[in-house]
Length: 112
Length: 109
Image (cartoon, rainbow over all chains, first blue to last red):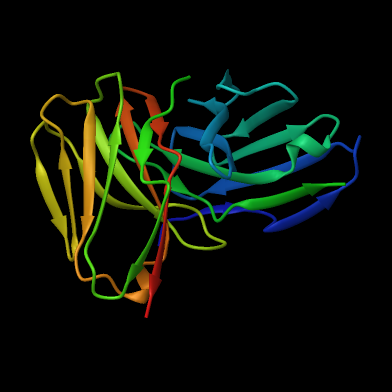
């Protein structure tokens, strides 16, 4: 059963902390994505990557960075967490031959 | 980037009723997709549509790719309590995927 695994389901962090959200996929997918999901706003793309060590900004990259050192792992980094980054974060992956993304179960981050 | 216009935002229906939701865009997409997200989980792909005018079914779900390539609808027939969740439309054009804001469906037994 193919999977996208996000390391934490729930996280509570303090304002100013550096936060790492990890995502691993076992499907050998080239493309990986980080979204945040907020009520009424749907899914908004933060960053994506088409290959190892590649990264591209999405629609709302401010306050975030990413790392892709290995093909199966895509990390989202909040350099200095703020309360407006409280949200559900979803990781997804896909390859060049298929349509649609496979999503992880999400990480609900609360910044206090 | 532009998101898709999905409606309705929410629906409260009785078990057994049919449901219809739709998605529109000012841009053309090559593929339309419908996802379902259950509480505490990530979205799961329900149906993918690849050609304008295509009508595809998956059990009680039916979706259509609009002839203009700028819209799509999803119908759920004879709803049951486990249909509860948020349904997202998505339009894909090459490597660009855009999502609607979601339709939250509540089914009363």
